[in-house]
Image 1 (spheres, rainbow, N blue to C red):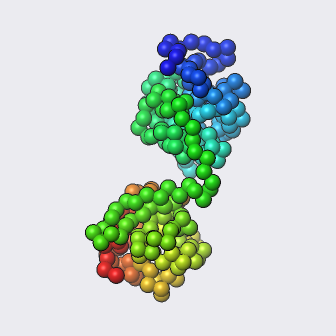
Image 2: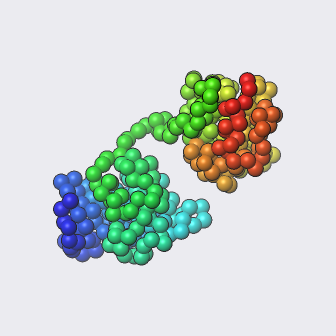
Image 3: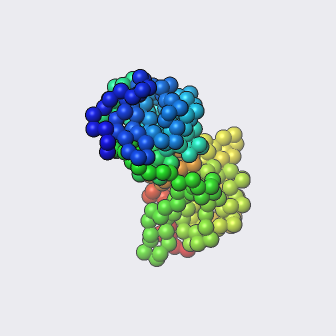
Length: 287
Protein backbone atom coordinates (compact mmCIF):
# COMPACT_ATOMS: atom_id res chain seq x y z
CA UNK A 1 0.00 0.00 0.00
CA UNK A 2 1.31 3.44 -0.88
CA UNK A 3 1.00 6.37 1.43
CA UNK A 4 2.46 5.03 4.65
CA UNK A 5 2.24 8.50 6.22
CA UNK A 6 -1.12 10.23 6.37
CA UNK A 7 -1.13 13.60 4.67
CA UNK A 8 -3.50 16.34 3.58
CA UNK A 9 -5.03 16.05 0.11
CA UNK A 10 -6.17 19.00 -1.99
CA UNK A 11 -9.56 18.51 -0.35
CA UNK A 12 -8.79 20.12 3.01
CA UNK A 13 -11.54 18.14 4.71
CA UNK A 14 -10.09 14.75 3.68
CA UNK A 15 -6.92 12.97 4.72
CA UNK A 16 -5.36 10.32 2.49
CA UNK A 17 -4.51 7.20 4.45
CA UNK A 18 -3.37 4.97 1.59
CA UNK A 19 -3.51 4.70 -2.20
CA UNK A 20 -3.32 1.98 -4.86
CA UNK A 21 -3.97 1.87 -8.58
CA UNK A 22 -7.65 1.26 -7.73
CA UNK A 23 -8.13 4.34 -5.57
CA UNK A 24 -7.54 5.70 -2.09
CA UNK A 25 -8.61 5.28 1.51
CA UNK A 26 -9.72 8.74 2.61
CA UNK A 27 -10.47 9.66 6.23
CA UNK A 28 -12.84 12.50 7.03
CA UNK A 29 -14.67 13.76 10.07
CA UNK A 30 -18.12 13.90 8.46
CA UNK A 31 -20.13 12.23 5.71
CA UNK A 32 -20.78 15.74 4.40
CA UNK A 33 -17.11 15.87 3.35
CA UNK A 34 -17.47 13.13 0.74
CA UNK A 35 -16.73 14.83 -2.59
CA UNK A 36 -16.95 14.34 -6.33
CA UNK A 37 -13.26 13.36 -6.42
CA UNK A 38 -14.15 10.17 -4.51
CA UNK A 39 -16.54 8.86 -7.17
CA UNK A 40 -16.00 5.25 -8.25
CA UNK A 41 -12.51 5.05 -6.71
CA UNK A 42 -12.17 5.87 -3.01
CA UNK A 43 -13.18 4.26 0.28
CA UNK A 44 -14.48 7.09 2.45
CA UNK A 45 -13.95 6.52 6.18
CA UNK A 46 -16.23 9.13 7.70
CA UNK A 47 -16.88 9.60 11.42
CA UNK A 48 -20.61 10.26 11.05
CA UNK A 49 -23.52 8.05 11.97
CA UNK A 50 -24.81 5.99 9.03
CA UNK A 51 -28.45 6.96 8.97
CA UNK A 52 -30.36 7.65 5.77
CA UNK A 53 -29.57 11.37 5.88
CA UNK A 54 -25.75 11.07 5.78
CA UNK A 55 -26.07 8.11 3.41
CA UNK A 56 -27.73 10.42 0.89
CA UNK A 57 -24.65 12.65 0.94
CA UNK A 58 -22.36 9.64 0.55
CA UNK A 59 -24.45 8.20 -2.28
CA UNK A 60 -24.52 11.49 -4.16
CA UNK A 61 -20.83 11.02 -4.98
CA UNK A 62 -20.94 7.20 -5.16
CA UNK A 63 -17.54 6.25 -3.68
CA UNK A 64 -16.11 2.75 -3.99
CA UNK A 65 -17.07 2.09 -0.37
CA UNK A 66 -17.95 3.83 2.88
CA UNK A 67 -17.35 3.22 6.58
CA UNK A 68 -19.17 5.21 9.27
CA UNK A 69 -20.17 4.77 12.93
CA UNK A 70 -23.14 2.86 14.39
CA UNK A 71 -23.84 5.48 17.10
CA UNK A 72 -25.52 2.88 19.28
CA UNK A 73 -27.88 1.80 16.45
CA UNK A 74 -30.86 3.44 18.19
CA UNK A 75 -34.63 3.01 17.85
CA UNK A 76 -35.68 1.34 14.59
CA UNK A 77 -31.98 0.99 13.74
CA UNK A 78 -32.01 4.61 12.59
CA UNK A 79 -28.28 5.17 13.12
CA UNK A 80 -27.35 2.40 10.67
CA UNK A 81 -30.34 2.53 8.29
CA UNK A 82 -28.08 4.11 5.68
CA UNK A 83 -26.34 0.76 5.26
CA UNK A 84 -29.40 -0.55 3.46
CA UNK A 85 -29.99 2.70 1.62
CA UNK A 86 -26.49 2.26 0.20
CA UNK A 87 -27.05 -1.47 -0.33
CA UNK A 88 -29.97 -0.67 -2.62
CA UNK A 89 -27.46 1.27 -4.74
CA UNK A 90 -24.92 -1.59 -4.49
CA UNK A 91 -22.47 0.62 -2.60
CA UNK A 92 -20.45 -1.37 -0.01
CA UNK A 93 -20.79 0.15 3.45
CA UNK A 94 -20.01 -0.75 7.04
CA UNK A 95 -20.10 0.90 10.45
CA UNK A 96 -17.87 0.73 13.50
CA UNK A 97 -18.96 0.20 17.08
CA UNK A 98 -19.25 3.70 18.54
CA UNK A 99 -17.49 2.56 21.72
CA UNK A 100 -14.30 1.89 19.73
CA UNK A 101 -13.97 5.36 18.17
CA UNK A 102 -13.95 9.09 18.76
CA UNK A 103 -16.99 10.51 17.00
CA UNK A 104 -16.14 13.22 14.50
CA UNK A 105 -12.55 12.04 14.04
CA UNK A 106 -12.09 10.17 10.75
CA UNK A 107 -8.47 9.22 11.35
CA UNK A 108 -9.33 7.78 14.77
CA UNK A 109 -12.17 5.81 13.17
CA UNK A 110 -9.69 4.36 10.69
CA UNK A 111 -7.01 3.62 13.29
CA UNK A 112 -9.12 2.29 16.17
CA UNK A 113 -12.61 1.40 14.89
CA UNK A 114 -14.00 -2.13 14.91
CA UNK A 115 -16.74 -3.07 12.44
CA UNK A 116 -20.10 -3.86 14.01
CA UNK A 117 -22.39 -4.09 10.95
CA UNK A 118 -21.92 -4.33 7.18
CA UNK A 119 -24.31 -4.40 4.24
CA UNK A 120 -24.50 -7.14 1.63
CA UNK A 121 -22.13 -5.49 -0.90
CA UNK A 122 -19.52 -5.00 1.86
CA UNK A 123 -19.90 -8.61 2.94
CA UNK A 124 -19.41 -9.61 -0.71
CA UNK A 125 -16.10 -7.76 -0.64
CA UNK A 126 -14.96 -9.65 2.46
CA UNK A 127 -15.80 -7.28 5.31
CA UNK A 128 -16.97 -9.04 8.47
CA UNK A 129 -18.22 -7.80 11.85
CA UNK A 130 -15.35 -7.70 14.33
CA UNK A 131 -12.83 -6.69 11.66
CA UNK A 132 -10.69 -3.61 12.41
CA UNK A 133 -11.74 -0.66 10.27
CA UNK A 134 -8.20 -0.31 8.93
CA UNK A 135 -8.49 -3.84 7.51
CA UNK A 136 -12.05 -3.36 6.28
CA UNK A 137 -11.01 -0.27 4.35
CA UNK A 138 -8.26 -2.23 2.58
CA UNK A 139 -10.72 -5.01 1.73
CA UNK A 140 -13.21 -2.51 0.28
CA UNK A 141 -10.52 -0.84 -1.78
CA UNK A 142 -9.24 -4.15 -3.18
CA UNK A 143 -12.54 -5.85 -4.07
CA UNK A 144 -15.76 -5.22 -5.95
CA UNK A 145 -19.21 -6.35 -4.77
CA UNK A 146 -21.41 -8.68 -6.77
CA UNK A 147 -24.37 -7.17 -8.62
CA UNK A 148 -27.03 -9.86 -8.22
CA UNK A 149 -30.64 -9.61 -9.30
CA UNK A 150 -33.14 -9.37 -6.45
CA UNK A 151 -34.15 -13.02 -6.70
CA UNK A 152 -30.50 -14.11 -6.46
CA UNK A 153 -30.00 -12.68 -2.96
CA UNK A 154 -31.39 -15.62 -1.02
CA UNK A 155 -28.63 -16.11 1.59
CA UNK A 156 -29.32 -19.83 1.44
CA UNK A 157 -27.25 -21.86 3.92
CA UNK A 158 -27.44 -25.40 5.26
CA UNK A 159 -27.34 -25.27 9.05
CA UNK A 160 -27.66 -28.93 10.06
CA UNK A 161 -27.87 -32.35 8.42
CA UNK A 162 -29.77 -35.05 10.31
CA UNK A 163 -28.55 -38.67 10.37
CA UNK A 164 -31.11 -39.62 7.72
CA UNK A 165 -29.90 -36.89 5.38
CA UNK A 166 -32.65 -34.32 5.89
CA UNK A 167 -31.33 -30.78 6.30
CA UNK A 168 -32.18 -27.58 8.11
CA UNK A 169 -31.84 -24.86 5.47
CA UNK A 170 -31.94 -21.11 6.07
CA UNK A 171 -33.12 -18.72 3.39
CA UNK A 172 -34.51 -15.22 3.66
CA UNK A 173 -37.96 -16.02 2.23
CA UNK A 174 -40.16 -19.06 1.77
CA UNK A 175 -40.35 -17.91 -1.86
CA UNK A 176 -36.70 -18.96 -2.23
CA UNK A 177 -37.37 -22.61 -1.38
CA UNK A 178 -36.22 -25.22 -3.91
CA UNK A 179 -37.86 -28.50 -5.02
CA UNK A 180 -35.38 -30.50 -2.95
CA UNK A 181 -36.64 -28.76 0.17
CA UNK A 182 -39.59 -31.15 0.21
CA UNK A 183 -37.27 -33.27 2.36
CA UNK A 184 -35.89 -30.37 4.41
CA UNK A 185 -36.84 -28.00 7.20
CA UNK A 186 -36.81 -24.41 6.00
CA UNK A 187 -36.01 -21.57 8.38
CA UNK A 188 -37.03 -18.32 6.72
CA UNK A 189 -37.88 -14.74 7.67
CA UNK A 190 -41.12 -13.67 6.03
CA UNK A 191 -44.47 -13.59 7.81
CA UNK A 192 -46.78 -16.62 7.96
CA UNK A 193 -49.97 -14.94 6.87
CA UNK A 194 -52.25 -16.24 4.15
CA UNK A 195 -49.99 -15.03 1.31
CA UNK A 196 -47.30 -17.47 2.49
CA UNK A 197 -49.63 -20.46 2.22
CA UNK A 198 -49.36 -21.02 -1.58
CA UNK A 199 -45.56 -21.14 -1.30
CA UNK A 200 -45.73 -23.55 1.61
CA UNK A 201 -48.20 -25.86 -0.14
CA UNK A 202 -46.25 -25.79 -3.40
CA UNK A 203 -42.96 -26.62 -1.65
CA UNK A 204 -44.52 -28.92 0.96
CA UNK A 205 -41.33 -28.94 3.08
CA UNK A 206 -40.77 -31.52 5.78
CA UNK A 207 -41.06 -28.65 8.25
CA UNK A 208 -40.75 -24.88 8.36
CA UNK A 209 -40.10 -21.95 10.66
CA UNK A 210 -41.08 -18.48 9.45
CA UNK A 211 -41.64 -15.14 11.20
CA UNK A 212 -44.88 -14.15 12.90
CA UNK A 213 -44.58 -10.68 11.39
CA UNK A 214 -45.57 -9.20 14.74
CA UNK A 215 -48.79 -11.29 14.47
CA UNK A 216 -50.97 -8.25 13.80
CA UNK A 217 -54.72 -7.90 14.10
CA UNK A 218 -56.51 -11.21 14.70
CA UNK A 219 -53.10 -12.97 14.63
CA UNK A 220 -53.12 -12.74 10.83
CA UNK A 221 -49.32 -13.07 10.76
CA UNK A 222 -49.51 -16.70 11.92
CA UNK A 223 -52.76 -17.70 10.18
CA UNK A 224 -50.82 -19.87 7.76
CA UNK A 225 -49.88 -22.30 10.52
CA UNK A 226 -53.48 -23.46 10.81
CA UNK A 227 -54.17 -23.30 7.08
CA UNK A 228 -51.32 -25.70 6.22
CA UNK A 229 -51.88 -28.00 9.18
CA UNK A 230 -54.74 -29.63 7.30
CA UNK A 231 -52.17 -30.67 4.69
CA UNK A 232 -49.91 -32.25 7.31
CA UNK A 233 -47.22 -29.56 7.29
CA UNK A 234 -45.37 -29.03 10.56
CA UNK A 235 -44.59 -25.38 11.15
CA UNK A 236 -43.77 -22.69 13.66
CA UNK A 237 -43.01 -18.97 13.79
CA UNK A 238 -40.43 -16.80 15.50
CA UNK A 239 -41.18 -13.56 17.29
CA UNK A 240 -40.55 -10.65 14.89
CA UNK A 241 -39.69 -8.48 17.90
CA UNK A 242 -36.73 -10.72 18.69
CA UNK A 243 -35.24 -11.48 15.27
CA UNK A 244 -35.29 -9.21 12.21
CA UNK A 245 -37.59 -10.06 9.33
CA UNK A 246 -35.93 -10.76 6.00
CA UNK A 247 -32.89 -12.47 7.56
CA UNK A 248 -33.23 -16.24 7.69
CA UNK A 249 -29.92 -16.73 9.49
CA UNK A 250 -31.08 -14.36 12.22
CA UNK A 251 -34.32 -16.37 12.52
CA UNK A 252 -32.20 -19.46 13.15
CA UNK A 253 -29.62 -17.95 15.48
CA UNK A 254 -31.72 -15.40 17.36
CA UNK A 255 -35.30 -16.54 16.84
CA UNK A 256 -37.63 -17.49 19.67
CA UNK A 257 -40.69 -19.57 18.84
CA UNK A 258 -43.90 -17.57 19.22
CA UNK A 259 -46.45 -20.03 17.78
CA UNK A 260 -46.60 -23.52 16.31
CA UNK A 261 -49.19 -25.84 14.81
CA UNK A 262 -50.22 -29.34 15.88
CA UNK A 263 -47.68 -31.38 13.89
CA UNK A 264 -44.82 -29.17 15.11
CA UNK A 265 -46.05 -29.37 18.69
CA UNK A 266 -46.16 -33.18 18.37
CA UNK A 267 -42.47 -33.06 17.42
CA UNK A 268 -41.66 -31.24 20.67
CA UNK A 269 -41.69 -27.64 19.45
CA UNK A 270 -42.84 -25.19 22.13
CA UNK A 271 -43.49 -21.47 22.43
CA UNK A 272 -40.45 -19.80 24.02
CA UNK A 273 -38.01 -22.32 22.54
CA UNK A 274 -34.93 -21.31 20.57
CA UNK A 275 -35.57 -21.60 16.85
CA UNK A 276 -32.34 -23.54 16.38
CA UNK A 277 -33.61 -26.24 18.75
CA UNK A 278 -37.07 -26.23 17.19
CA UNK A 279 -35.54 -26.70 13.73
CA UNK A 280 -33.57 -29.69 14.94
CA UNK A 281 -36.66 -31.24 16.52
CA UNK A 282 -38.56 -30.79 13.27
CA UNK A 283 -35.87 -32.26 11.04
CA UNK A 284 -35.34 -35.29 13.31
CA UNK A 285 -39.04 -36.09 13.81
CA UNK A 286 -40.44 -39.33 12.46
CA UNK A 287 -42.44 -38.92 9.19
